[in-house]
Length: 206
Ligand code: VGL
Ligand code: ZN
Picture 1 (cartoon, rainbow, N blue to C red):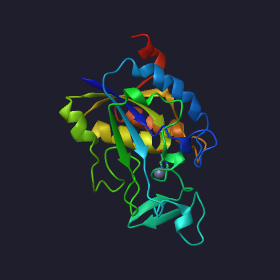
Picture 2: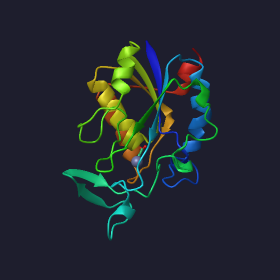
Picture 3: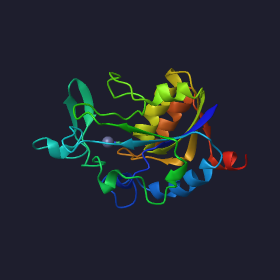
Picture 4: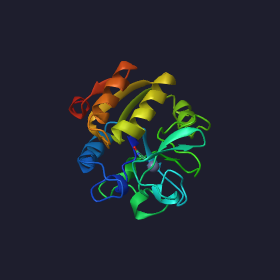
């Protein structure tokens, strides 16, 4: 069985959002079109408490983009984004949420960030995702969303370690690109680890 995994298609990562990812909005119509080809559609939401320690504003004298040590893990500091129940944390308005069969929240513990939809960044705790996919006998994941160089990349690498067959829908992922080539490098790394890189039009022809 296969599932479509929609990563963090939330207002704060889209146009005029707090952590805007360039061209993010172009993913929304592609996601809507793809949904009709899948029975299982899992969507993640970055879902932080207001005191989350990945926010630069929750540290003295720190700015977004700076790197700190957070309980032994390297942490990039971000602008305040995706605060639980805020407009910024909501799915983009244009996303057809009716077909979503399961929502996974991540980044809910203030003391540790969670880029992957499977585990936090320390691999200390798992979300419900793996259990849910196993309960539905899903072995193939088609992944798209935001952002290529963070949540998409970490999710894909964990999925490969968990022995899923992973298809990365390249044109439906956009990168933060703190460094110019971060998105491209992330795609190369995912491919090297076994992800199959495809474009949405290969699926829409199904
Ligand atoms: C993300 C940075 C901080 C993402 C989430 O969804 O890629 N990036 N929080
Ligand atoms: Zn976040």
